[in-house]
Image (cartoon, rainbow over all chains, first blue to last red; front, side, top):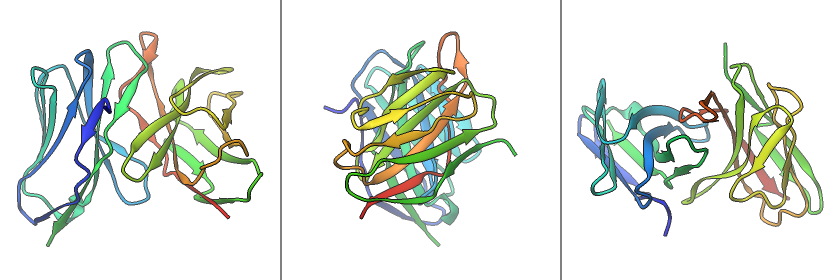
Length: 111
Length: 116
């Protein structure tokens, strides 16, 4: 079992839709949770990160962590064609070097 | 502009050949990493380094070697012992927080390595 599981998609939505991207993780000791966005053949860029449980909002993006169910979510409101990319979730232990990535979900937002 | 530069963008390896991927950063980060990305498998850690002249193996270090002679540079050599080297290779850096690697990784644009 992979430590971080993510549905690879692909996911296709119309412009303006609300997008929900999800991951599950197996290690209950993970404390940091990150979302990276990766455009085709580019390096990932950090989009959101949260520490422990709860929600974090940044513009059209909301990251949500539910530690009780070991579930990580990223919501994108009013999705735009420029949001078309692969989204990678990642988790990390506190004070530890071990970061684990999901396989990535490929998202296409159609105009 | 601060960032991470990887070169070359595309690289081809002949059987039995060693090749070296370059990674340079001017972010003044202490930690640097090499990841391998294969379709459907996410990022897997090859090696990381928290400080000059020191580095640690990641999950898939076999067939790879690194050096860290300067803070800014962390080259990766794919040796002939790596039998399946075709992949997208990503270099990253981060700060070191209270002795452990930070959670915010900054990535380069990657190198696509293919076997001839």
